[in-house]
Length: 286
Ligand SMILES: C[S@@+](CC[C@H](N)C(=O)[O-])C[C@H]1O[C@@H](n2cnc3c(N)ncnc32)[C@H](O)[C@@H]1O
Image 1 (cartoon, rainbow, N blue to C red):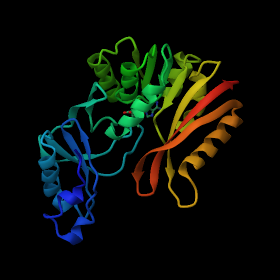
Image 2: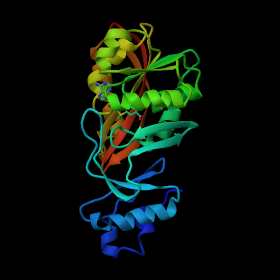
Image 3: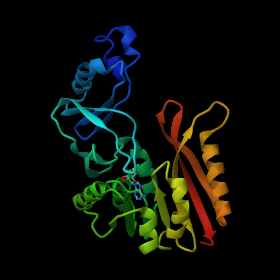
Image 4: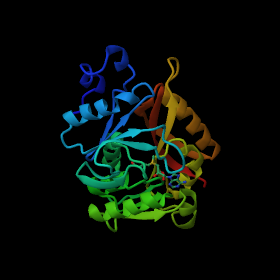
C-alpha cells in the first residue's frame, strides 16, 4: 500500500524541510522512482530508506532528475540506494512487462487507463497503437479482449526490443504485431485503412499525428483514443479546451465525428493534467 512520503518522513526531517519533499513516487516492479528537489536532495538516503521500509520488495531506489524529454520520452534517472540497476519486470493486470526505466518510457499510473481501453475493444477488432512503448496498452488489450490484431508502433529501437520480449513473455505472439519506425511512415507504408480503433498515447505529439490516425482507420470509421496535456485553470475545463482544439482540427479535415467521452487521466505536474478523448469517427474523406 503506497503511503505519502511526507507522512513517512515526519519524524525524520525538520518540519520546515518536509514541505520540499514530493509526496508521490512510483513503484515499477522492485524499483522505486522518487522525485527530488534541490532542497530535498540532501535527504535522498532518508527518502530512499523510508520508501524501502514500507515497500519491502523494493530493491532499488532511483531519483528523477528533470522532466520527461525528447522523442523517446525519457527521464534522466540517478541511482540513490539498493541494487544499481534500471531493468525490471513490472506486473500489471495479469501481464508482466520487462522494461529498462532509463531507456524506455513507462508509467504505472496509466494502469486504469490501459484497462479502460481494453474494456472497450470488441471481439474481432483491429487496433493500431501509434506510440506503443514497451507494448503495455497493446498487450493488456490482447490479454483482456477479443482483439484480432494490435499493430504496435514505436520509433525507439530499445522500446521496440522490450516490446518484442514482452509479447513473447505474455503469449501475445501473432496478436500484437511490433513495428519499428515513425508512426506516420509505418501507417502510410503498410497500415492504411485497416483499423477499427487507433490509440494515440503520446500527449504533445498526438495533435500533429491526427491525420495519420484517420489514415489508419477503416473507411467505414471507428474509434480514436486521443491523449494530450492541458493546463488546469480555474475558469476553463482542460477537457473542454482539448475537445474544442481537436474537434476544430478534425472538422477542417472533413471528418464526421462525435466525442463520446473526455476525461482527465491524471495530473502530470502543478496545474497540468493528461486528458483523453474517445472520438467516434463516423466517416472521413481521407
Ligand atoms: C508516452 S510513451 C507511450 C507509452 C506506452 N503507450 C505505455 O503505456 O507504456 C510514447 C512512446 O512513443 C514513442 N514515439 C515517439 N515519437 C514517435 C513516433 N513519431 N512514432 C512512433 N513512436 C513514437 C516513444 O519512443 C515512446 O515509447
